Image (cartoon, rainbow, N blue to C red; front, side):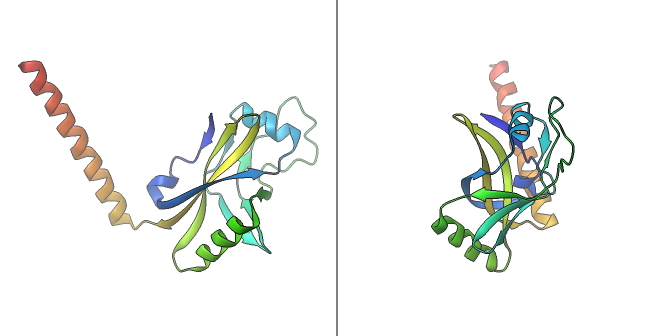
Length: 150
C-alpha cells in the first residue's frame, strides 16, 4: 500500500530501474509514516562506504510521541543486499545517473522505500512529455465524443 509518493520524481527524471529497500526508522517515525505524514520532495539517496543513505526526506514528528531531540530531516540508513548496493553505487558513478527516492510503501508489516535509478530530464524534454500527454488526452476526448454521436 502506497504511503507517500514523490510525485515530481517521474517528471524530473527518466527512471531506468527501481529497487525496494528497507529503511532504519524509529517507532515514532513508523507511526508517523503509517499516518501518511511526511515528504520525499528534495530528497536523494547517497552511497557512502558501501552503504546507502536517504538524505533530506522529511518525516513529520508523531504527535503522541516524545519528540525531544527529534530531527525530521535526519539522514536514514537504507537496507539492501551488498550486491545491490555495489551495483547501484557503481551506476551512480557514471555521468548523469542518480538515485531518487520514489515512494514509501507498506509491504506486509514493514515500510519499504522504492528507489529509482534515473537520469535527469532537460526542460525541453519535460515540455515535450506534457504536450504528448495533452494530445493523447484530447484524442481520447474526441474519440469518446464521436462514439456518443453514433
